[in-house]
Image 1: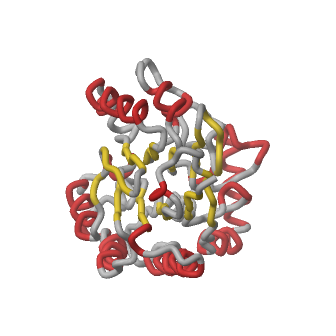
Image 2: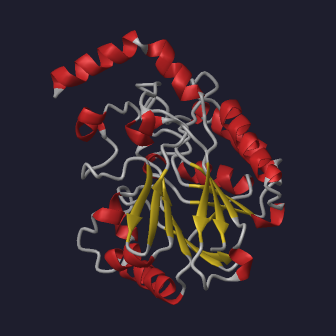
Length: 301
């Protein structure tokens, strides 16, 4: 594995200009999600814009706050073209605002994250803003500062809420806060999922979807959730199909949940490759690793 890793890094470094260009080319795909026939009327045309895995740390990073905000502005323009009003727009952030590696986890390197959150604060283009934390946020020594930045940007940390007839729930990070998948939280969530078939779950790490590790309610939550939005994987970041199971370092279980839509139970799971990069490897290659800020528009059947 070490030899394979060295060869891979050597190839990537050789091709680095293209990889950096790919990492900076953030796409803004729009996905229509068809609602069941008995969905509440107000859910029609509800738009959810997802940002995930920004991994911001300073202005010298290849993918900075300006690039991300330009892509977000493009996503909003697409909603304007479709005549989606502000009062039917939700912005969600599914974790890893910054990186927790030692060299980046210092007080002096939150400047780009601060700039990004300040831009979001000044931008009233969404009726609701929610966030969940990622493993890097949870590991960061300045986690309280990270939560404060997101709060100042107008985001609420999501546990359970509802909007336009849709139930929204946010999970803790599955790696760093496994103890937070406690019976009280899950009992509350499964009750809401059972009572409301239009439940959207925000989760940084999709591993829990296929690997419940003894949590008695997770399988039923997965089976009954209408839509799960996650990130964390970076779409492998270096997406080489034959090597995916070796280079998907962001899954402890080598899950198939890498990027895009997956059918589970009565609904769908969407894993976004996000917009940032691992800082030791500021490149992206391959179809599943294309950086993005996706939009999901709920449509009546």
